Image 1 (cartoon, one colour):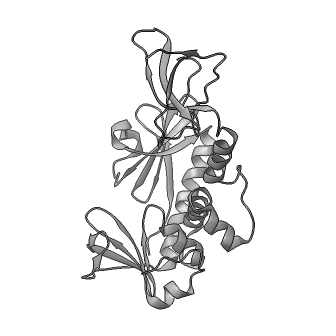
Image 2 (tube, one colour; image 1 turned 120 degrees about the vertical axis):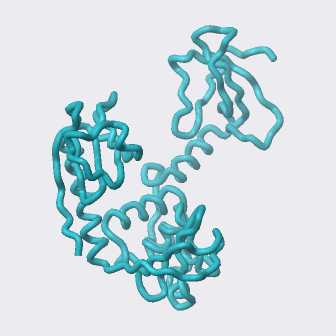
Image 3 (tube, one colour; image 1 turned 45 degrees about the vertical axis):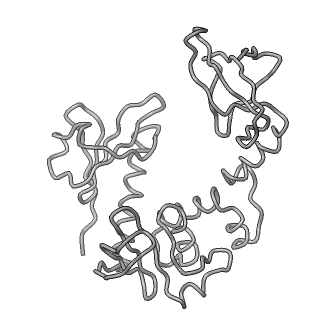
Length: 267
């Protein structure tokens, strides 16, 4: 069993760094704190690391405490994953994403397959039938981008705390109907990205919402936008408006035009 320890230090440029087994993390100064950049198989001393050694991005933290907290979560995840005893095997099996090139057995009847381009879980008939109906996908294949969360929510004892948290967040944001059916309560706009988007669409169903924008060459300091009613893309009628570059932001669900303040742009 691998001993999961954390090593903290500073890079050659004086940035906070940490190593957990062969995973490396550097806290790169950013506007709102520090960007968490990650790398793999970093064996050199931390003092020799630089930004070229890390390529992944795992969010923003405010300070050193936030950096250390993130690293501690990673270490806990690795310890829990090792304790779960998952086994890597080879299986000659055709998946919806191509031939399996490697498989990880989480438990009897729960196997994750990797292919050249994608991957996901295969649940056998019994495991799939035991899932909550709102989580179940006919055939038992659950792709790795989103559907994997259905497996983790359905079989939480096979996953780490970090994986369970990510699965819950994924289901809340992108499959709120399934989450509500499993948990027996309604999600609000504050709980779910999809529910928040639905709120936005309801509130601005009759407003002009931008569907495309570009910084204007003809009007310095302004953005040329194209908007449709409700931001819909399945309708032909659209209008163009000029918006200050300082004001314009695509936002979480779209930019709403104010016909009184924003200047119409003739075709």
